[in-house]
Amino acid sequence: MHKNIFALMMDRHSEEVFSALRRKLTSEHDDETIQRLPPMIILGETDQRSFDRKHFSLSLTFSTAAVRTALGYLLIPDEEAQLEKIASDLGVFPEHCGIYVSERSPLSDFQPFTCTHQKLVLVKPYQEGFLLVQ
Image: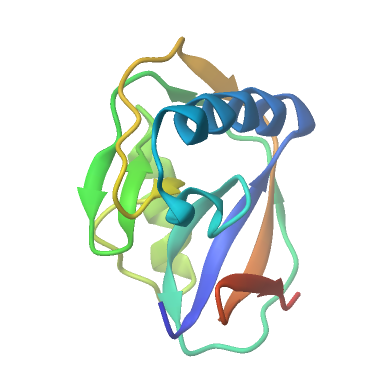
């Protein structure tokens, strides 16, 4: 990942649920890429360096196994079309929108959960981590 990434920060409850899933995945796999990005919904890569701050109240349900994409494995919400609309409005056209899991380790066994509040952010990949740009 070399470009900036538009993403949605999740509500606190969803972030905690996903962080617990990620801790379990980390204990089962020797995969340093699991911690590459914080728990957030990836909308897609962009050359943009700024944007208008926005909040959303989408009800997004994550119930199926992670899908392999160019950015790694993502958990795709059942309501992905809503995220694709936001991405399109931002000028981003990703293969899929979803929560980053890992580059190498899929997440397949988990209890479905719902995210009900999201905040638009811009993330810049930096060395082995990330910087929250805005």
